[in-house]
Every structure is written in structure tokens, then in C-alpha cells.
Length: 84
Image (cartoon, rainbow, N blue to C red):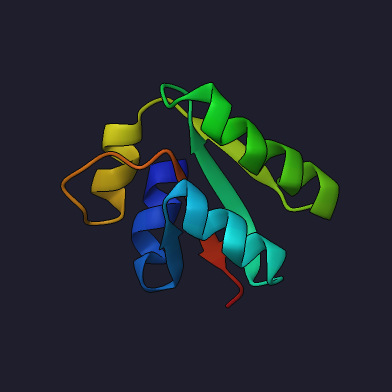
């Protein structure tokens, strides 16, 4: 379900850990997806901030599939959906 959700709102996604963190700090994000196979050192920052800001987040199994769902040819460790 998660990949499909990202595909359907592709115009509102923020791709990448740094961009996701920045958008979360700016209050622009409604939900976050994190790849299980990504570097935990980087994704843990996203998880902590999501918990702190009460932003729903969920894990997906593959950064390659998450990147593909966003329409990019490389993996994505974290993807966020902007408020609609």
C-alpha cells in the first residue's frame, strides 16, 4: 500500500533524508516513508523528528522500490508527503 500511496501523490513528495528533515522542520509534511534497507544512522534522525512532531511514519522494505515509486532511478532512504 505504501508504494502505491507515494505513486498517487507523486507531485507532492519530498525525496531524500535531508529534504525530508527540512520540510518536516518547516511544518510542510503530513506523512513519511522510510526504507528499511537504508542507513539507520540517517533514517533514525527522520524517525526521531517524526515522533517529536507527531508526523505519521511507516517503513517500507526497499529504498530502490521507494525511489522507483517517486519516479527516480536511484534509491530513496526517506520520502515525505506534503500537505494536500
